[in-house]
Length: 336
Ligand code: TXA
Ligand code: MG
Image (cartoon, rainbow, N blue to C red):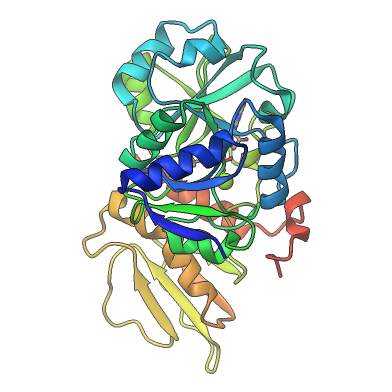
């Protein structure tokens, strides 16, 4: 089992930084989800990340950096859009895809000529980046295809045998992954909606394109239709639809945006936010899906939320959690 250390303890940061530098994997908190980190320029360490996650090597990793200046070490053609986006949203849940410099191993970028870079906002992540003094390649710390972890214990449950050290930084405040925005073409393209709303990006750099859900974009394989999926089947209600009544004897869960009265027949009901706040809902989403997964339910009915702001990322994750097309990661022992 992995050792869980308090990420706010400077001694733990020193231990974790030394482990990373010597090529070991360290799981650490970010403001979005927990990451499974490896020294990004160490190919053996990066290969270990793919192995532990059972992640196909065509799916590139995000490289985490300690400050804005660092990106020019790893990327080229950093234009004004990148500058203003970093100014406005870094540190924070925005990942920028830019042309890569040759020192980034091909394994990190899955052979693409671009690299995804992000400066996380979590104090423990930043402390680790500074102490390690190497860029950290880190996907979410879950087996490929499963729901991302938002606490240290989730990581322990999912990868505890395969990772030596987990830094505990408490529950993640944002709860869905970073927005991935490619700046390699004239028109900025959001490949994955996430913690920074598309509207907020557009307010800074003008109109942006958003990759459509159905298009499994080769430029961002994390956008495969089936992803972020619990084992229990989900049915996603159409926006504004009435809540259906389960059949007698059926063990069904209900996941709501906010509490409702007069609903019966469900084995268990949970609301993501007491007052329907989308930010709060995002922060609770993955933990709620995990809880439903442990209850022996036949299925879970999920209410749609508005696509505004972070609601777009919530709906993106829910749609992918519903789809059950087999893909490379589904053979893992974590899938039923
Ligand atoms: O919030 C987050 O982004 C978390 C934390 C740990 O930082 N990380 C995360 O990593 O979600 P991961 O590996 O689960 O998702 C990374 C996404 C994938 O959709 C991947 O395809 C995309 O970023 N990506 C990485 N490098 C890319 C590149 N060069 N071009 C396009 N997409 C890229
Ligand atoms: Mg992931």
